[in-house]
Image (cartoon, rainbow, N blue to C red; front, side, top):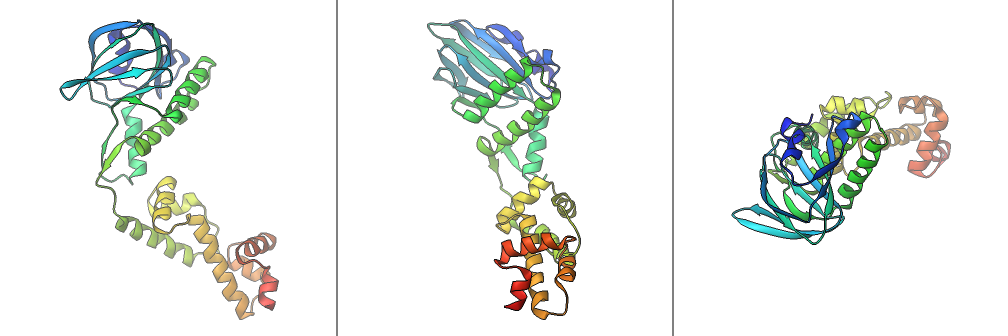
Length: 290
């Protein structure tokens, strides 16, 4: 949920608000459009718990922000982004030959925290969220423009919720600094349990969601851990284990192909034969004959 300071942020800005996603009924994020005058003397916006992303959509100016005891400047043109981290006040000013327009996105701090927990297994990881005066990121730019179009056309809250979660993950992956990265030992222990379960239950139908529940992780966390440790997805590993079992059973020769399919978790022998040929290169019958 957007915090109250973000809702009141427009009161501190030098410019006219031209658009607000709040009027579309969205609460998962806040997107506003502004027309700004050619010049603005120094002013300060208070801190909020939300991440702020500003996209220049028209015009240009020389923009300045006071940070670390000095003024920093950048020339803003359409497509340029400014990013301000939660909890930071902003002292700003600008000067230009023309008016300029912006979209300003307030992304809830709670949404970013939820994404952080998913990315880093819910364990304690210090994350420094970005504050950047001038930044190019086509993903952020296009997403903000798409959000404006969607809000104006009456898209439902689900659109905003989905976009907010995606943008939070994108910021963490591509713009944030993460300290004390997670060690592989934790992932190794968890995946050892998942691997043991798969090997003991190859005849049982199982989904990624079920494997994630066994691991005590989200599906995204499990996929990420499997990629880091195994170099393959859990379901690809499950298929490989089943095909290895199928080859052993075919070599023994005491079970029919249908019985082997069932032992390997395939209720449909045709699906088993297709998977086996894709993995081994020949059909189960051809493998047995060879």
